[in-house]
Amino acid sequence: MTETKSNRVARRGRLFPEIQWTEEQKNLYISELENHHQRCRVIFERLQPELIKTHHNWFMAVDAESGDYFINQDEEVVTQMCVEKYPKAIPFIFVINETGVAGRI
Image (cartoon, rainbow, N blue to C red; front, top):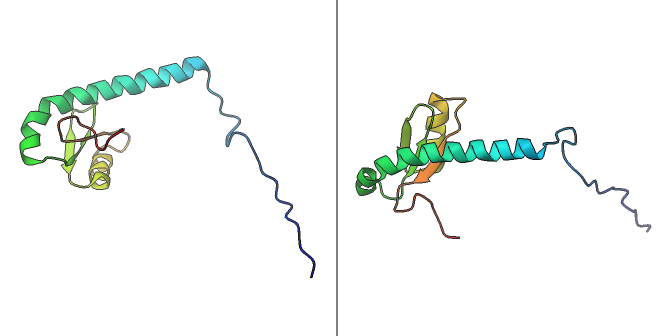
């Protein structure tokens, strides 16, 4: 019996080579993301002391543009609630605990 050889070629490189960001575009994106996080963090820190008593370790999605927030025990559900009300918004997810984050690094 003869063995067949695979002619499969491993392709290396970018998935979309036509999309190339400059350093300026990367820095602008990072600064916008950080600005968005800071606006959401202000809303979270304002509400955290009151919500931690009743919703400890629940998830909270915050929309920075409207200032609305959504709370649920499931991260997927809270994200879906935010996206249904604000389809173009990018929600920032917090966990209602002392730090606002889940897990350890």
